[in-house]
Length: 437
Image (cartoon, rainbow, N blue to C red; front, side, top):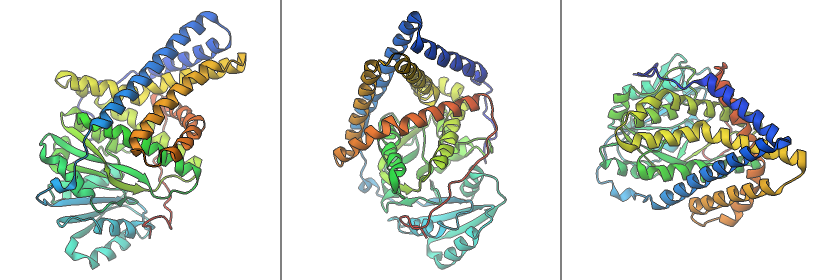
């Protein structure tokens, strides 16, 4: 199992996009400094960008509010579910990871740990725990280090369940996670359900910013897209799959230069006509980077990986019948790079204009509109609980954290278009967080 290349050869013109992007940024600088004609053109681009942002956010708000939350009581039978935990040098957390899975309120589980060539005590600790819990059918497999996609595929090959729950080794699941997820599979077109992700190591402002980002951006967007069965990323910490769907599309991509195997698999499932749902009450808590360098490394990989997922599957998506394929392609194109380019261009234009002319009003008006949209998303995402506490944090996040990540995302895209080499890295696990060993 495992795909090494896309079945189609169409790719986006990466170098041309890179050159056009650099020209656009240069134009924004010139327009902000002096040129009246370029200034007028750039103001039209600002209006178009803000209109896209508002239209996107309003659509997400409407569909996030419309999508019903399914109750776990809807599950009447208990088919076998195989829980797959890929692990590479996870000795710090593997015990607590398995302990979390063992507390899931579901009677028919098997647990598969795949040790991906760890050089620490991951395999030994997992096998020791497996030996003490035979009633849960805990099995441990080892392979030479081949990457997360390969480890997940090995788990899928050995899985006996009709459904497969893929979780990261640092994931801490809510006991009702499986029951909530299974309720969606009464629809035979549903291939997978992505859960909601929360921060486990909630310490310091950087972790608080990430928790807010998960709430207002990632989980909120997943909840809205679920209305259409078009969730574009099943998160690594918690994804429940129909095993037959995974086998039908060839499982995870095992290439070492595929930097977001979860996004690529999700988009590939969508491109084959499957529906992907999301449930933000199907919760997994995960560790997040605690320093800026680690965060930037993670987001660099995410941004490049999301573009790769879109690029590898754009033609199959467009060939889907009806409006569905076009709609998913348009949304993915906006999310993967178009909105990033437009947002950064507008930011560069405003910044140079302020520095050259000390005129703040247009920039403040644009930011007020964007923040207003994000506050509305926050209200829907948190359902009113803790809104005022998080609103102040959101304002600080928008003018600091969000702008830094936006600029870093542009760098990641430019590197992806230039085929810059990048190695996989791994977040250092922490002891002392919730559930950690």
